[in-house]
Length: 142
Image (cartoon, rainbow, N blue to C red; front, side):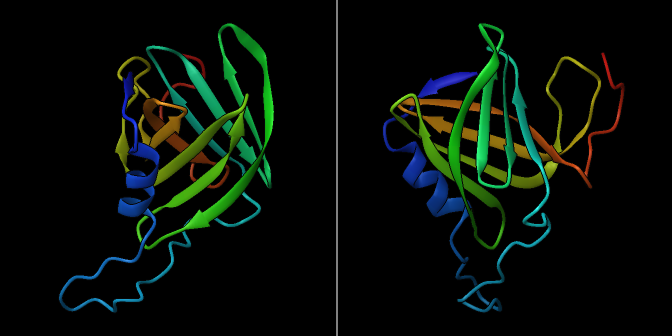
């Protein structure tokens, strides 16, 4: 699903990547550490179909129209309830977040361990995510 939201990238990071300040929780928060720095992270979505694969400091954005993909430099950042990546893709700012939560792509009968959201330019892409050590469950090739 694509939705244009002008300031979504900044708001997304503010919500998912900054320490929470709630009663009984350390205001400094605990940095999200469920995904090791060396793990490959894959975010994927439908309508339109897209995939973002991040290995180290390199992101690779693929779509049905661009199956070889477009590589870009990705910077990793973590908050207290998720992991984020930022970079520039084809001259547009990109911010991707991965937050814990069971996720379905609505098409494949797969269950993913993370919810994925990408802000690219003025568009928002919603989908699911997984890592090398935390894969999806369900059919490998639906």
